[in-house]
Amino acid sequence: MLRAVLLSLVATAVGPAFATRNQVPLHQWRHPLDEDLSEWSLDVLPNPNATDHLVFETVHSLLQHWPNTRMRNGHNIVPGIVPKGTVLYHGTDRNELPPGPEWVATDPEHSHLFCREKRNYDARQGCWQLSLATTRPLKVVYFDGSSAVKLPYGSLDTQDLIAWGKSDSDNPFDDWTRIVDLCEWGKNFSVDGFVRMEMDFEIMLCDFTSGVSEVSFSYLARQSGGQRKLLESLFEVMNSGSWHNHLPGETRIQLDLTALVSFYDTQLVSSLVPIRAGQERWDHRVANISSEDLSAVKSRLEKLLAGPPDPSSGIDWQTLVQVIVDRYAQRLELIHYLLNTSVTDPSTMVDLANKTQTQLRIILTPHLLFSATPTDPSNGEDLDWTAPIYKICATTHTRLMDLEMGSMTNSEKLLLQAVRGTTREICRVVTKMWAAGVHAGIDPLLNPRDSIDIVEITQVWNSWGRDLDRLMAWLDWNVWVKCSPECNPDEMCYLPTWPVGFPRIGRPGRGPGGPGEKPPPPPSGPQGPHPERPSSFDLRVMLMESLAGEMETHIMAAEPDDWIRPQPRCVRRIEPYDIL
Image (cartoon, rainbow, N blue to C red; front, top):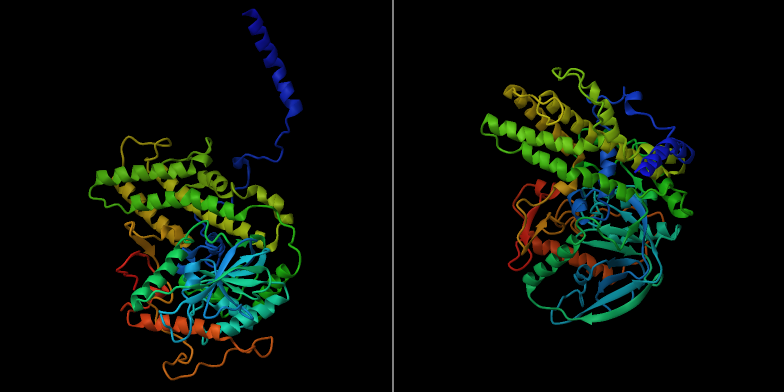
């Protein structure tokens, strides 16, 4: 016993000295209460022209079908690769390799839609489907949004600006000129293809003899059935596209976020700031970019594609963005549900207010400093005491990244600012809501009251609803867009997807004025005269035109908002289909 006591005393005596010799003090750490908190007022809202949240959400949505179907007008151009060994598919009317650029699909359901024997389609005949495997990593450029959708409202803007220097809304179906000019431009940077999305993902492959090898070239059976089979084929393309609705998205494309170029980058593209002012996000386009800003965008993109990758920080930006969405999305959605629960009497409101306050405290628990308490609990206007909580919450994920700024690419600095701006506003609103509950006496641990003022609780309840609605509308995260109630097992949640249910606009031979009008000539490409387009391409255009025609009689008799601002609904996965 005496020996144990002596050993304990010795350990106590030498322990601190031992620690001093072997531990490195955190000289740079300062307690948040000792720092300047003047910039952390809960009353300061984000700049209305700031795009941090837009960069954040579009990066979170890259290569995911659902968010890029909802917000069709892309704003990002991102270099990437298709890994070696990836199988791609090409449906055609002949058993020969395309002699020039053509399209390949990432899923066979998509390519099979273009698997036709000849223009005068006979279902008793078969069709050709080419399967290819990449023999090396293919260098690709990804245009986000619904960048293969043939509509004149902005989905094609980014690629048209790169190919032609302007958006050509009068010729959405002129994909042959588009692919030829993009591939000619990309040849200077050893680009193998361009990734786009419509019902599913596709690649505009520039050369079928470079970096890919034939796996099979099969003459497949076709099934008869008229429009019923057409609907089945269309649905299965959209069904395969839905496999990539959410994370991890289309994994056969690997993007380099350190080389991302965004039209939401206000330092790079300042000319679009006044154009976006007052617009809803659905209406954002890049078509009216200034010539100076477009030159800057192309210069940066070409520099990124031309040389070896710039040194980067090594930060996993995609994971960082996802961590933040995981941390806040479900909890904010739960609080929104509580605040929108029907209140029938004062006791119900008090119960829901207590539950809401608990959820707000749960979100902030990692940041609730023991020393941060209200100086005057009865004064709900005094929120200065919350500044250190707000700051820790907003900067936890990014504070030490300031030390890495010197090793970051321009794209990484944009991503860092996007994360900073997004987390700052989330933490501002959540901290403000929680502090309102503290001053109202409903926090379970800080300033609880024995008696509750129902008038004050009602005021807090209403302010909570306004603050959260504004925050969630500002964030506009696509993970909150879903079918409610959930779909049955024989259904899937669906957003209106071109060409199903869309009016025929800008079709070849019709033009913007309607039947009989010829479309205006396409923009002259920078590469001079274009090679004659192959009949296989005519088949592709004919098929897309045919699909639009077949669907025209089934277009939903609704306002354009149904397809410009798509809303989710459940549709059947088996016959009878109700996708129209």
